[in-house]
Length: 102
Image 1 (cartoon, rainbow, N blue to C red):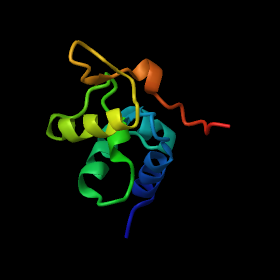
Image 2 (cartoon, rainbow, N blue to C red):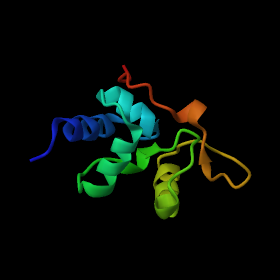
Image 3 (tube, rainbow, N blue to C red):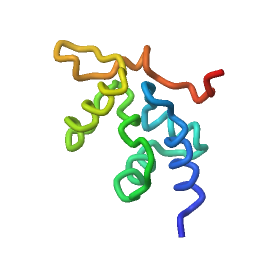
């Protein structure tokens, strides 16, 4: 049985549109949970069909163990990148505020 926190976090991640991202903390706030770490832990253990690649660190960097695949998926969606190697998401331009596009 999936906990209400897990359901809320997975639902929040499922709503992030293609080409946009949220930080772990953004997802936690949006889902109404108190911990960004909980978001990371749930993503690590749940085998849910959600766009996991749209969740990253607040500074726009992916976790090292998923870096290559995550950046590949984000670039494929046209997410703006920055940094000398274009290996960090431009959070200012790509962060989703949770409001559906009209």
